Length: 151
Image 1 (cartoon, rainbow, N blue to C red):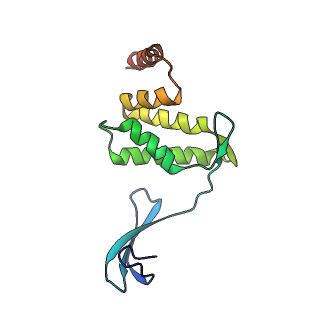
Image 2: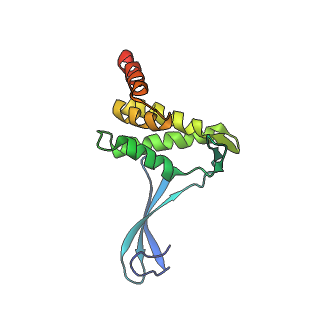
């Protein structure tokens, strides 16, 4: 592991522990040259399927793209960082559960929408408006009516 301060490759592990979700190992390290301490996270490499987009294009699954979509939907909403991260992990688990080499992007979109619906109605509608490509205000009103009827 390269030291972020001096670039030295020699360091020692001071402490290792599992994260709260038990899906990563957090390691506290110390550089043997400059004695700076830094933290690294190790995650098991997952073999996630290729995503088949609506237009038929295929691309690798990207946690960062899912995270960005969730962050945009939850912008200035009372949704904790932990809840957003847990939703991301739920989406990853849904993709892994597909069990195929390729999976449609609808698996991702529906998983995100289901999670956001539980967390925050406004974030849900924001995401749904982009995912379902709302074209006018009528589609917004229809989606809002569905939410109001369920409450």
